[in-house]
Amino acid sequence: MHDLTLVFDLDGTLVDTAPDLIAATNHVLEYVRVPPVDVNNLRPWIGQGAKYMIEMAIGPAHANLTDEERDRLLERYLAFYAENIAEASQPFEGAVAALEHFQAAGARLAVCTNKMERMSKSLLAELDLARYFAVIAGRDTFDAFKPNPKHLLDTIRTAGGDAERAIMIGDTGVDIATARAARVPVIAVSFGYTDTPVHEFSPDAVIDHYRDLEPAIKALMF
Image 1 (cartoon, rainbow, N blue to C red):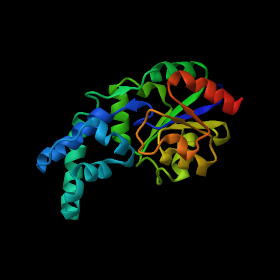
Image 2 (cartoon, rainbow, N blue to C red; image 1 turned 180 degrees about the vertical axis):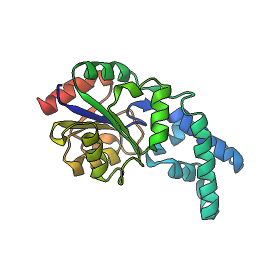
Image 3 (cartoon, rainbow, N blue to C red; image 1 turned 180 degrees about the horizontal axis):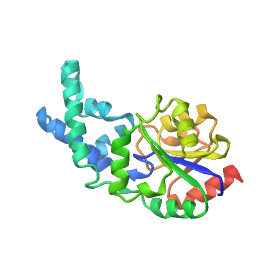
Image 4 (spheres, rainbow, N blue to C red; image 1 turned 90 degrees about the vertical axis):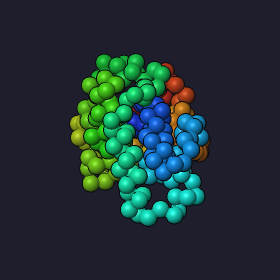
């Protein structure tokens, strides 16, 4: 694993953030007097971002909102989420053990997420995971974000790695498209946030648990 850079997406890949993201969404729904949504109903849409989640949760009535009202709802969502970012979020089973193993084996670890950098760092710090990563790159860290390949390539470079010795691990079509455009191998997790089964995006490998990550990496790189 020496000189290998492993770049992880965050929400739906490393951390199951769904409970806190749904709580923030329901906070907005209460404000606009719309019934709360169940975690499982909104979970597939999490990977599309906060604006999309709010739209899906509000339903057809969202079309009647002005741009200013949409902006206010997003601000309300983000403020609530920032204050409650790790109330129920937890690393996926086996993720921490995998990070410890790869770090000990000499791999560079990084995060490349479309979550804002400040919130990403806050979440990982709250969960005591930030210490594993050479860089935590959010949507606003560089001048491009996923699916632009520059986001991934800049993350690898900032971590001190080489794109020719790197692997992306993600959970959505956006992650896979980003890695493909950057010409970086990509491993998808099957337990993330996507409304389309992740294998349909044709990643290089799909894993169902973090115990499967090392064999998948070895099959790609060695």
